[in-house]
Image 1 (cartoon, rainbow, N blue to C red):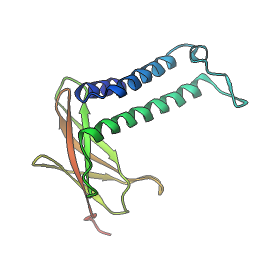
Image 2: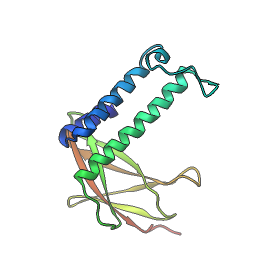
Image 3: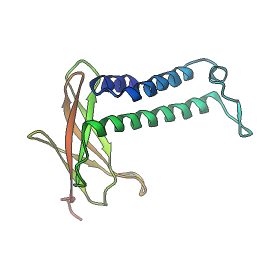
Image 4: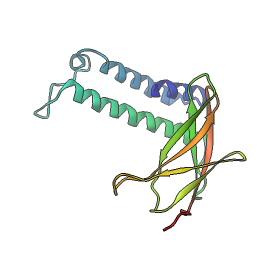
Length: 168
């Protein structure tokens, strides 16, 4: 689903040099679907004198694909939406890859100080942002908004960091 959504995003904001990368990501994904991809991918069963299973290699390849998809998306978004010039405002871009109007929770992670949160605006509409505290001390908090996304479309949200209003 991520690669299909990425292809849709590339159709909206073409980047000829990224089309080949997305095609290569599809090929990498298809390799993991083979019943014996050690042979198909020419991947050694013993890597650096450590035996690996197909499951471990598939998991590694899925992580690589996810990371590369995120990198391509960042490249496209940075060309569509220039930086805010060092302001505390950030842009969150959400994509609906289905043909139906969809209201869904959008969860994002952001490194912030211990008590900060965000305000979120889309045009003249302000959306409520819920802060989700991390389970572990070394994790960043997550934030959630509930937003309607247009069919086969993108929607941008402006996030502004603000101090936490709750008790201290």
